[in-house]
Length: 511
Image (cartoon, rainbow, N blue to C red; front, top):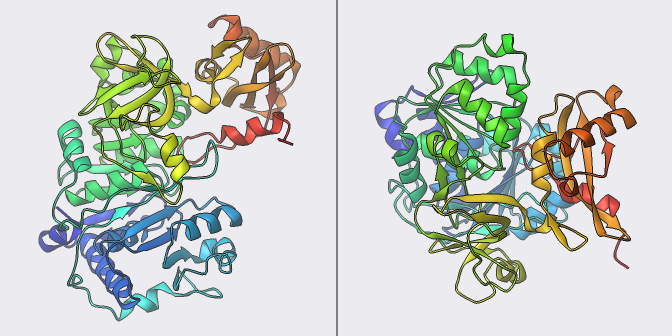
């Protein structure tokens, strides 16, 4: 139930196949190199409970580094390779990393945070060297390939994407359990998706995000082969399913939309018959998009709702979803509550803040205020991810939007996700964000910012067309009153939109 156990029986089996380069990392290589790095952590003085951080693109050694930290009993923070110097420095310093790893491709940003991260004792660089860093390859070369004497399980401490403010480090509690002991996520994965050592798992998203990292590591516990895309491309993803006989995959809705917008002849070109399980999460999926995916791929589409915080897990399969279109599922263990601003539970089908009870505890590292804000006001220990939604009579949850982005126009709550879901399906729209902007009379009005399929289409004509399109499908008060156009929206590679960055442009700065 870990790479070392797999390597003992199938040492030459591919643990990772990089989709673009074709580079293969075998289970023997994964096991031995992660052991070498674990020994280097110990030689540097790190003990269970200490912290390391790494910033990499989808690199062949990404999961090796994660396993090295995990089997050393450490906290490990995987960091987005798209961050600015200030954002990177904040996370490396805030997580209290004693070791920081990066690659030569990212050397400019990695070296720029040295002065701002004085707690880092060792800086390692893959594929080259840079000022303040030592060669990763040289540093681990002389270390033993056997496990460290005090091997035990660590945990990731990942940062929220910062879509609504400064990123928050989600710090779980370390179990210090033996490496071979499976965690609750693996048990869920096995129960819901039935993977095995023969599975081939396609990971099209950046590995520094919670779901790709955790699912990849858990599939490796089973001895599966991972096919990791360096970056997502819709047609390449289909080609990889055919080429490698992919059985399991995980997506975000924006990937579904991009695949569906491929020409029908392109989509029909690839044999997807090996695919038995397509999982999606991370952002709400527009109902028509999911309907078309199930029609195309069959009832193999699985959805879950959870967060980096790990405080709850909801699930729905294709058949149940078709009977409850738009739901993100029902809880598997624990309970879901929908509450008003005072913490009182609301009747069924009334919109409110979604809370989880009976789930694992967590804190936001070094931020007591944010930790308190995630708890329910009445002190029952319930926790929230900040989403708005409602429950139906059978206990299925439907998400409406993030609490931070609810628009209050003339005293009426408007949930931007509804208009976003409609506009995202227009053939001339590549991406869209809807949010509130100041309005003297109504308080806020609904605004959309659209990335058109081509900027040549942008202008008053397309603005009118999109507003009319939205109003033909939604009540007028839910639709944008004006639309601006951009060549690209600030979207995280995992599919999450940095709506805060757009919204802040339209609001006057606080005095």
